[in-house]
Length: 313
Image (tube, rainbow, N blue to C red; front, side, top):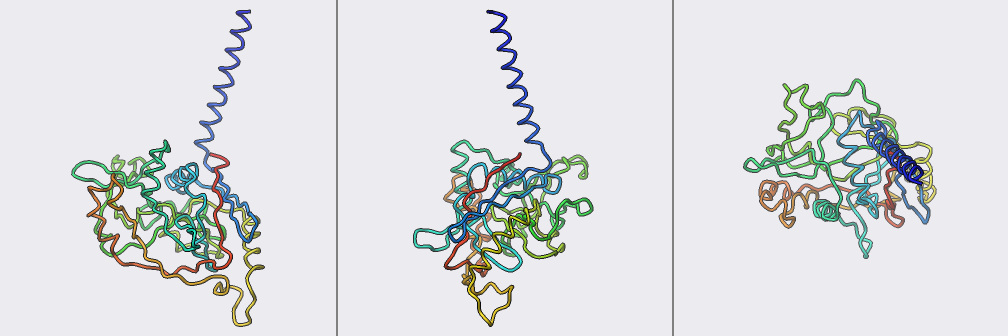
């Protein structure tokens, strides 16, 4: 009987060890996958995206952690153009009005519930590193040079981390970032000072719909690629639901959308979030910069992001 108990314990430990190995190996895979379920016109469309840790390791980790915390569930596509669909930062309220999601308050609340968000950008406040909950800008304009061996670039289906353009004053704000190379190309120093404007991405992302525009790779981090057949089913559904108009071209989205002027950066490090209260004045000029953008918002038939689920780590 003791032998059987011992055997059972050994087998159980073996199974647990194997499971741990699978989980560990899954966490270090080069190409995790996520499925974004878009809901449009009463039907769901699952689109699988393959991510690239070699292209943008910190962006991939950031996106996976937001997905695991269900941050994206219930948001929407807030800007639909012929070259990209933008999501991850807005939702519709009960009046069907577009509302900016308070990213900083949301991630702090999720963290208080036990979720973990890996930091890669900080503000040095009198010698103290204050986490900013933004993500390191993994593109060449931010000094990250991996153009020669990238898996993905701006071609149709590219998944890209997006940030709203900051005001001129933001260029004077320096933050501390953690380099991808661990300091190998920086005399062994793992961290360096960079502009906040290039390291301010929070949750916004877009799926590129154009054929190719690699010049955008300099400014935004491409970190994944959509299954084009699955993506096309969603795009075809939108096209079929769009009223025909003799005066519009095939790439004209004006029939499907309405233009909305949106103030940007209104929630950059709000002082109402306690962790930022002592540095809020540093970012006040960014938050009140008055920048705005025109969104082509899907009108009568919104495109919702029902869920974002990680299917392979």
